[in-house]
Image (cartoon, rainbow, N blue to C red):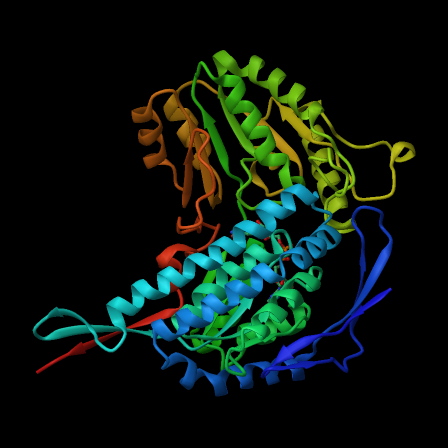
Length: 479
Ligand code: NAD
């Protein structure tokens, strides 16, 4: 059994003396593989002090100099690539091929983009203000000490989407990753440590949300919280952060809609929608978990979806044919199975997947790709975030009704529109209340500012916009 007890504070690796620990189980076989020794409040306070002490020097460097450090980190991220892959396969049970491309290469590439963003900001702001008119000029300055709190589902991406822009902005950081994916975070800290940033600029403490997360949220010396996780915890953090009116950037849950208009490429659309939900075992905040299909193509779409889901291999993350691995842990496994029961009780029709009978269950937190038809948007399975491989297919009668169903959600993170005519897809996209809209088979774009409407959050990550989340604007009005 591994003992994981590494926290990075003021340029030094520290162990926690706290009695608090958690045991991690491999999602693929349920065997305990690690004990994580958790940071306590004392360690978290040390990290905040280190970040505070490092702030003035780091924030005054200028964007161009920080671009050099970002470029050094990128080199180290590439050097640590295989370590990240092994850690994510073990911690999350994510299939290896998906892990390589989506969980590791894409976030490294997103970090690399920040070298260019830093150079753009250097041209605009380093050594001079942006002149608006003869009396007014603007400066952009780092907001201060930032606490970055992240979840486990894309453990490297979530960290990088915050760390890269915050470092470019000139902020100093206390990072608290999910305590159930600590190895990915420690490898990232090792890569950043090897890039030789000034001591105290980057600090990592691995602790629970209830102890370390809540301390950081309310801490008087923390100027900004950037949080990715559930809407429920986001609300708690926003309240706690009110104590010193910190800036709060929230990236929260979702229940995204896929609006499929009557199309000659129905099968292509449905298959894409099914795979979108099932990848990463449905543990994706932007997953298109509500598929909206015109009534004229509804039965055909349901048949295509069920047939395709049955071809997706459920299995251990290291097997080459695996499309869906296990879900992260027992709590998530139970929660998803409860939602499958809720769907059945609500009268939705299970067209594939569902519960695995206890006598057929193998070790590992495996859930079959599950699809419900005859779902109405008011059902709990259509309104609440399940965070598992469960897709709801909903019929609509006309385009306006499809748009209202898509928008009838407390969430507004993402959506996809499928239409044969570009003018139709653009018209629908404009009416959807969500922060990221994909058209037809469009792919993830690292420069697209990412974030939600409504209870999916209130900030933006990635792209140059993502850096603005960590900057203050200073207006200088001249006589
Ligand atoms: P979670 O909200 O339970 O935990 C997220 C982080 O918050 C963890 O580091 C946890 O330790 C910490 N935390 C928990 N309680 C806290 C508290 N009281 N104060 C401060 N910190 C606290 O979420 P999770 O289960 O790790 O992740 C799944 C959720 O994350 C889903 O709802 C998913 O939609 C969301 N998510 C959103 C995005 C996005 O970008 N919008 C991306 C990925 C995941």
